[in-house]
Image 1 (cartoon, rainbow, N blue to C red):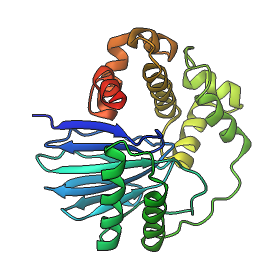
Image 2: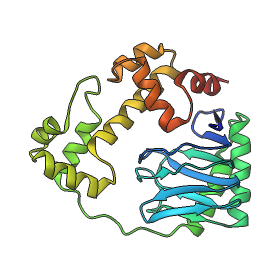
Image 3: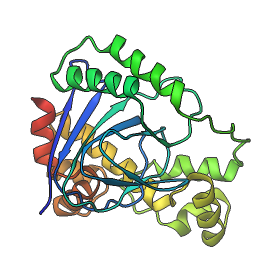
Image 4: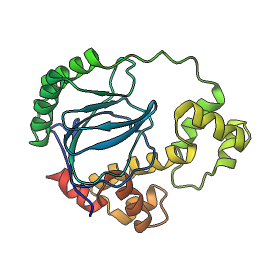
Length: 250
């Protein structure tokens, strides 16, 4: 049986919260533009990070920097919470698991305030970021990204209502489809199609939250129909677009 998923945000809309109680289904590899910080409260959760799969137990947290590919393996029972923070100017952290009493206290304080819809979360956010910086290992600074890959990444998030497949993306970037797919996955941890799906879901979320009908948001974001959007949305968000919107508006 699928678990209960509850979404929320603070009074400014900058900090989003997710509370998951019960079993979770496996998610595909994906990434976020936000910084993702999470804490396991009960049971176990298996999180797939670039350095491998981490089995997290109660009291274990996880840090997933922006644009870092990750996934959740299916887990029976348990519960965990997540806060999504604006990226801003963050240190080059590596995705990692953490276990620390002070970090957990800072996470609990920010989560409670944001879930309650309080607008004054800046200080709590700064405290949690400072605790994260104390614990998270630093990643090596990446070298310059080749221009074709930068172009492909940009194009993967544009013209979302059009059918731009790998072959078309390769032509626009000046690479063969096979070469583009291989280099892109190596550089970003995801394929162009996976990044394009994320961009479509982000656009659909913005439209739905602004009051656009789900069917219209699906068409604008390039989904075949409302059912197509709902299936993709549920895989990554754990709930339907309509239920997510109602929770966020509350």
